Length: 309
Ligand SMILES: NC(=O)c1ccc[n+]([C@@H]2O[C@H](COP(=O)([O-])OP(=O)(O)OC[C@H]3O[C@@H](n4cnc5c(N)ncnc54)[C@H](OP(=O)(O)O)[C@@H]3O)[C@@H](O)[C@H]2O)c1
Image (cartoon, rainbow, N blue to C red):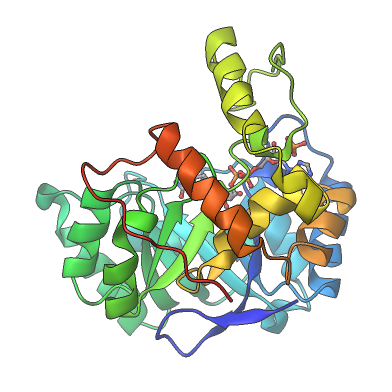
């Protein structure tokens, strides 16, 4: 496992983190024992970062069970998702659920609006109280990045970035670099569609699966779009590894959190993805495909954002 700086926070994070939504049931039924084995396997490979939320089913409870006796090996990130009791009372509950005294990163699950600015104050207070070592915002759009980074006191942002969703990350690389904010990348496998394992006629019958409500047209269109990037398989060994290591080709990425719920996935996500990179030629081909497919949110110029290492 390779490690990167979590922005300017002084914290070193594994470049692949454990996305713990799946072990709470986001992608259909889960086997708790297998979830615990997947977490242990991730740890064996050197993963030290896990991202969860109270709204991810049993995820925090499974983590609580897992962390007993190994707290110091992990950086734990969770989120406030708008629970009515408020941010501070919710964090207190989450600490009890996970059996820990403090989290390493506490995030608000969306970018607060103008009317919600007091949420930032609550976030600053939990940091000051030592209940959260770092604070962050999980966000979605270019406008979100602009408004959150204006605050100047946010340690980390979390955002989606994948072959099919190049923005907002690529649009805001300069600002991200200038502010020194840590960056957690999520949804790089695009609900599994960028692993190449689904066909156009895929169905998701489990009502708890977040893809259950997708229309057949949406599924077919997503599979068709993903297939255009199939060429990365030759270089990366599999679509799943190629899609997962794409964000790691950018120095501004601190860690990519991969939704993992089995030992087999952990073997790939933590044993193979870290250290994998796509070649300059592949990154250029990806960029021109993204442009051709109209995947950039921005109007006008697409800067040459590719910087590799
Ligand atoms: N707003 C927010 O803050 C927000 C939103 C979304 C996600 N997140 C965070 O980001 C994390 C990652 O996002 P995600 O879980 O939605 O999606 P993801 O990591 O992009 O994709 C998960 C999907 O990929 C599949 N998968 C994972 N590893 C695989 C492998 N090695 N081979 C084949 N398939 C594989 C899973 O398959 P199976 O279905 O078979 O398990 C699942 O369908 C979450 O766990 C959560 O921590 C945060």
